[in-house]
Length: 61
Figure 1 (spheres, rainbow, N blue to C red):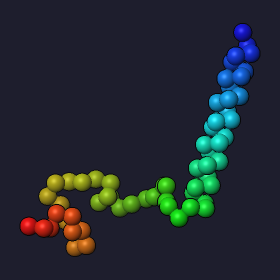
Figure 2 (cartoon, one colour):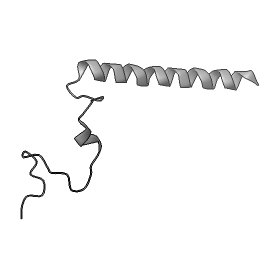
Figure 3 (cartoon, rainbow, N blue to C red):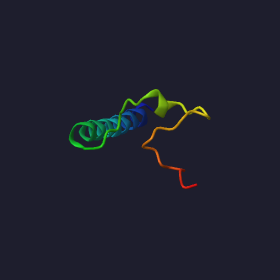
Figure 4 (cartoon, rainbow, N blue to C red):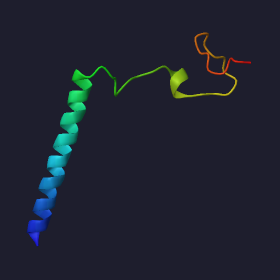
């Protein structure tokens, strides 16, 4: 009864090691930023807040 649990645990542990290794490699050797800290303007949107001058998303009118 213990053999399936051991095999399952080894497979899950190997998978987690691969995911963590890929994440660490992507953080240090990629030009993308997977974890970033932005301003509170990017975190929360409150309707009626003035937009910044460089945002031209809906200024076609």
